[in-house]
Amino acid sequence: MTTDTLAVPTVSETRYGLLNNEAPTRWMMAAWNDFMAAPLLSLTWGVIFAGLGIGLSLGLNLVGLDSLIPAAMAGFFLVAPVLTVGMMELARLRSVGEPMTFAGSLRAWKRNPTGLGGIGMVLMLAMTAWLQIALLVFSLFFHANPPALDNFLLSLLSSDQAFAFLLMGCSLGGVLAATVFALGALSVPMLMERNVSVVEAMTTSAGFVWANRRVMLAWAACIVVLVGFGFLTFFLGLVLTLPLLAYGSWHLYEDFKSLSE
Image 1 (cartoon, one colour):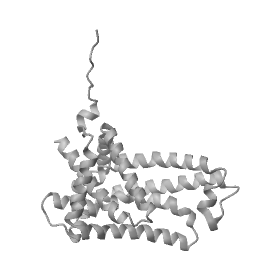
Image 2: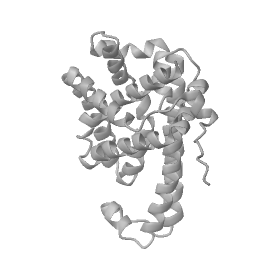
Image 3: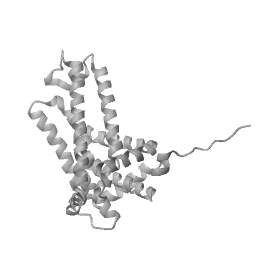
Image 4: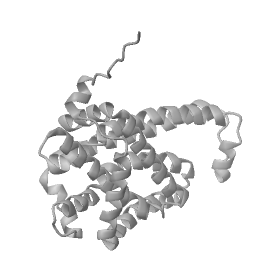
């Protein structure tokens, strides 16, 4: 005789509610509709961020610090969530039936400047921590025989230490990125809309991500693919993908609100 067992929701699942498996697809479809509702405005924001990435890379190249470009770009995207507040505001404006304008997108910072500034500082600390970790890992493997600066990337990848270096760097970077993702997935749009503390927003975000870890893992994978596409196209792809991710993040937050009601 067999006994069927029912899956019992955990405390976090009961508190935050559960997303269905199709949620990331729904967010991206809604994001595409937002993009098409204001394509020129969306592309304007995308160009701004792609320009920041290109400018940072060219600046490091001009001062002879090409070796820092990969780490700096990864760090840049750790703080990107708070920089995309304007794009999230466009999705919010459309959801409430208000006009999507560039001036309107800038007003998002006025509702909770302290909270948004606070989460910005947290993300800046995360970026600083990543740069320190990247430098320490590099020093650990290449302090005695650093790669040639005139052909840095090829020299690094062809070295005997390349596999171990990349394994450790990607592992530590992955842990930091996962932490930032869990803390920031909901906190940025929440702080944009509500007058709550940074701590409350981050703990709510982390709890919601954990309760819906399978669905949120799929969303994280989507972010990695779209951001990776932007890197592979020397930031030009970000003109399209960053607005989509920002809009999708807003629709993720809307699902959180509906599940919490």
